Image (tube, rainbow, N blue to C red; front, side):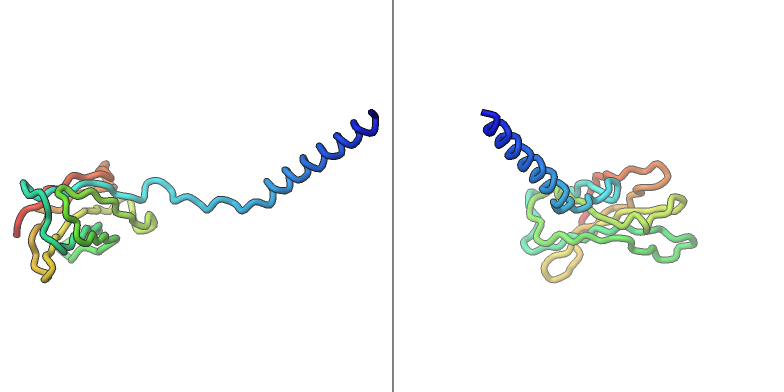
Length: 143
């Protein structure tokens, strides 16, 4: 009986060592993307149910420049053939490109398959800084 107890303890010890080795040798999980570098929202083009076939939506995050200098593009998302209206989007940006005292905006253009402008946002929507949100609802107008 003493031999059986010793054998059982030996097997238990082997399992414990194997478990410790398995945990310590496992591949670490890939780093998760930090929260706060995504702008989400929806785009609505009035009463249409579907966008034209093969249309392209371009969503821009820009840093506004003083003195009417052209804004600087920070990030861009392209949605090809969006079909259903409204469109939900998630625009990723590099947090290192954002400075708290600057002004950042979202604007949208929608083109048909021949690159003709169909819809656009009526204005630029402020986001991220100066207590502006990271979620927007944008109404598109026909051009």
